Picture 1 (cartoon, rainbow, N blue to C red):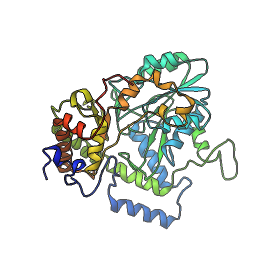
Picture 2: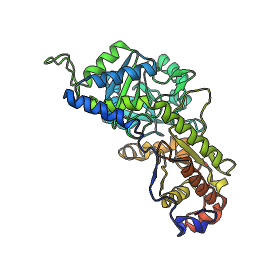
Picture 3: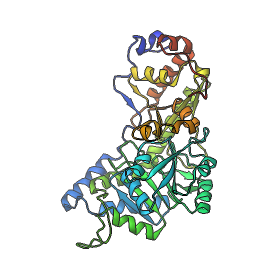
Picture 4: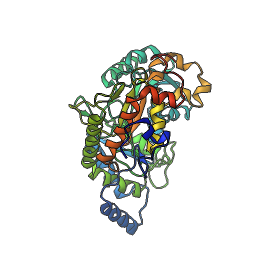
Amino acid sequence: MIKRSPDDLAVFGGPVAFDTALHVGRPNIGDRARLLGRINDLLDRRWLTNGGPVREEFERAVAALVGVRHCIATCNGTVALEIAIRACAMSGEVIIPSFTFVATAHALQWQEITPIFCDVDPRTHTLDPAQVEARVTRRTTGIIGVHLWGRACDVDALAEIALRRRLRLLFDAAHAFGCSYRGRMIGQFGDAEVFSFHATKVVNTFEGGAIVTDDDHLAARMRLMKNFGFAGEDRVVALGINGKMSEVSAAMGVTSLESLPEFVAVNQANHDCYRVGLAGLTGVTLLAYEEAERCNYQYVVLEIDEDLAQVTRDDLHQILRAENVRARRYFYPGCHRMEPYRSLYPAAGRDLPNTEWLARRILCLPTGTTVSTGEIDRVCEIVRTAVTHGAEVHDRLGRTAPRPLGTL
């Protein structure tokens, strides 16, 4: 059914648009036959973990694609970040954005390091270097920049601050595998960078992560740390944990890497389809990507200007969910408003106006190899109908009047 009026929307009693839910980040699978062949081979070898040949192949492939000497594969991206933080001897305070997935903050707090939440540039959604500089104290030991949506943060400015202030610099590149910054692949910057290969990412290992670096000494430390500190069969030389990637996860990773060009092509085509379908819609802006840079196009990000659209981001979220479109409010409400940070730092929001502003505006839409352009056309039709009749839709949803932009 074509949805042209508010009465056609499922939230107001119309038929649901999709029998099967459309998800943000439903897993890409790649060549199933090759994956199963690799799994059968590793089962025949009976080498399931502890640094097998498939994990080594995956690490070599990631390092080659990124253009670094070292890749340390791990069981997930959060553990990778924790290992990188510890290997860099971070302590005291570390500056991070609040507009990020909560694991960025947890990886510090878990190790009793204080995350200092810093505001972001409202245009780029990433750390504002000027505000980073203002938050450096005698207790600051590092900065963790986050490449959001596959777009790099201001690497050069953060690197200059870190060098001048003698701080360690890490990058959370969970969104940015296969992307570039000024012609160089993300993964080549800072002391180290961390990727996520969670099931929802463009390349996945079912569940996994990796640290990449050109620092030989740092890489050696991290390899020890991810395997209990073992330097041989029965010789432990350092404190460590179990952060290893299994062989079956690595098999999925190698298979995903083989299909990466296909995944990116589908994501880019989907993004183009959304761009056409939402063009000219008042109050709705689709986040754009730099054509000169490599990008994985993994995220379809809308900014909703509620004053112009006359519906709020949360209105659209509710409308799409009713249609079985599992849109996501990334990164609502901001790490500083989640526990334990909300209790530990109750006044943090006063210094994060851009973060709070973005957290009310951002809505991510489904994409990936399981979403067709025909389904995207229908999602755009739903959004367009809701916004075209924005005032009526907002009133019928029973929400309060839109707040002026910039208010908290």
